[in-house]
Image 1 (spheres, rainbow, N blue to C red):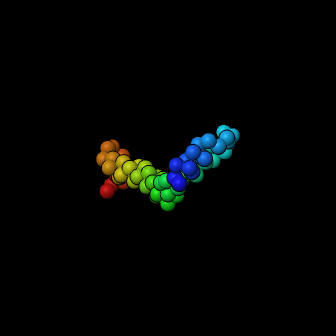
Image 2 (cartoon, rainbow, N blue to C red):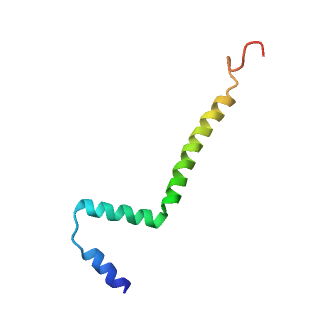
Image 3 (cartoon, helix red, strand yellow):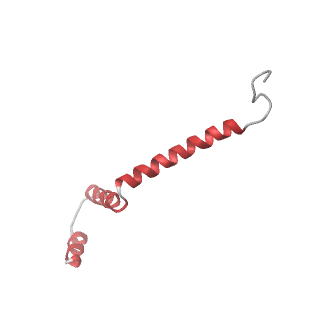
Length: 68
């Protein structure tokens, strides 16, 4: 039965838009929407953390308050 579905999907005529919608939905189903959102959030948080760590780690001239 799986082979019939595969032949049916690959043999179907579709426009470019329909193909892109099909490919996009297939990717979402394959990886899962929650995994994609978690990956995006993780990369954004990692970028923010490195910026904060860089600001804290600077020990050069003028990095501390005057008189501290």
